Length: 227
Ligand code: NI
Ligand code: MN
Image 1 (cartoon, helix red, strand yellow):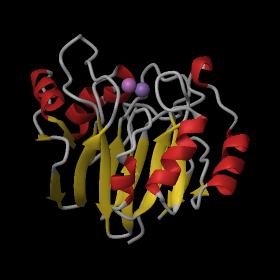
Image 2: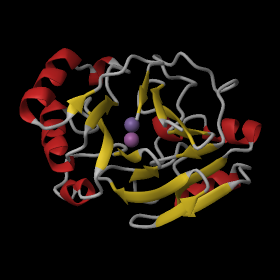
Image 3: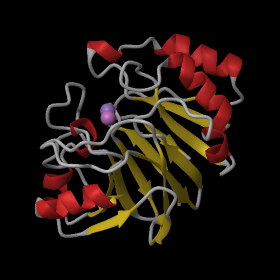
C-alpha cells in the first residue's frame, strides 16, 4: 500500500499508511491558512513534535473525539493526560518504538516547547517515521544543526523541513539542512501562515534543485505527495 503525505497547512501533515491516518502537529483552530476543521478531520494516530500552540494545536479535541493514539515526548504526554486524553504513548529523544503502522523515532530539534498554559513541554523533537515505503523525517520547528548529517544516514525518502525563518530555519539554512539530510524529496513547511514567515517558494525550489541532490516538492494546502 502506498504511503501518502498531505499538507494541511503550516506544519500540519496527514499521512495515510498501513490503513491508518496519522496527523502530525494538527493545528486548525486559529490557523489562518487551514482548509480543514478539527471537528471533522480523521485520525487514528496524532504525533506532536513540541508544545507550542501552533503544533499541539487541536490535539486534545481531536484525540477526545476520535480516540486517536497520541505520541509525543514524556512531558507533553503527561500534560495531554491532565487535559483528559486517555490514549497516549510517551517517548523521548533518541528512542524508537515499533507501532502497528510503522516505527517512530524522536530526534533532537533546537527550539522551545512550552505548552499553551505555560506548562513544561520538555524538549522539542523531530520525528523519523519508518514506513514500508521509506523513511520520512519531520524536522519540527528547529534551527539548522550539524547532526542532521546523522539523521541523513537513515536513508530518507522524504524530509519535511521548516523554511519560514524568524522562528525556525529560513531558506538559506534549509538548503544546508537538505545537503546534510540528503533526502530523495524535500517538502517545505512552516511558511506563509503569517506575514512574518512569508517566503517565495519558486526561488526556494530553484535553489534546492541547483544546490542539493534532493527534489523539491512544494505542496499546495490539501495537496498530497505519494511516497
Ligand atoms: Ni514552535
Ligand atoms: Mn511553530
